[in-house]
Image 1 (cartoon, rainbow, N blue to C red):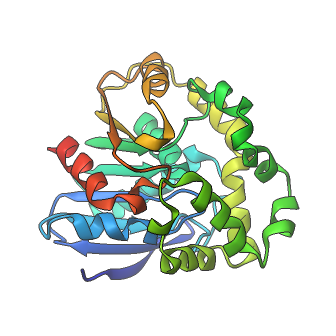
Image 2 (spheres, rainbow, N blue to C red):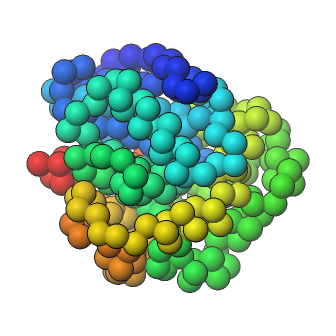
Length: 278
């Protein structure tokens, strides 16, 4: 698989764009979560046919993308993604977001046009079961990461060790997150500014919940909610989307995968996305 790299200026930011496949093909735009970079999608991109156009980015302020979105608001990040979509002329777009990237994809779904959206392995702030997730002791890091400055002080210089904890605990088989991938993700957050851009994704959760709660009208854009089968049942998440007004919802699981399904089972993830996209 050949990857083409570019840096695209958008509204005072500069986004690192990694692309493969046919530049004239149907576009699939991938948004990573935390603690990841664009490289989390390489297996999925390799599993796609050459006729598709596969585009993955580093989120603003992470990796080779410069100009973080101050505060980490998912609505603001979605607006920046929209600017990229317009700049690249991505018609008939399938937008795919994992973890915090899925939160951005939901904000995009609410405020911008896409042909279809895929959200993977995440809860959406303000949508059920958000309150239940916040009470779950297994997501202790939500609170820590929201504290100003402290997580940067604790993690700086120890990115690899800290990130490894999440890959190891949340994966069905941690060995599927390769040493090369782990090293690349750690390097993407190797500066204080990049760490802050990542932790700001968590610091924005209260604002994100307010923004999402204000969007109560129906939305007809087709949405696929995709979850690794080792992360548990998706039924509560489906109820949350429907209660928020999502009218065209499909749910699916990825067999033998945990939180990082796109790295654990990339071919199966691509199969689910391709089937949904038709």
